[in-house]
Image (tube, rainbow, N blue to C red; front, side, top):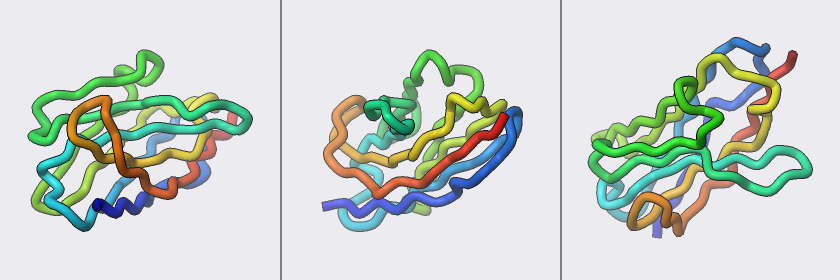
Length: 118
């Protein structure tokens, strides 16, 4: 079992940056691939980015490529999502996830809200 707690969300203006953090506890953090998904109001949850257990491999939703960066610090049991050049369409609840491999997530946090005003 892995417990995930997101932080760092908030209200920003278009063009601003935010860094989300996800602190993990429970089983060995570096055994898991980690990821971020988001759910905008009235829409289904969508994948945003994920990262391999070592950090060597990452994958992004096309619409965030070049703006968002996922990273992890296995010594701190934390995964990050650096979000630059934010757009109003990035407004969503962002969820952290963990799983046995990239694209396969079994554990989810409760989410943190990001609101981008125009």
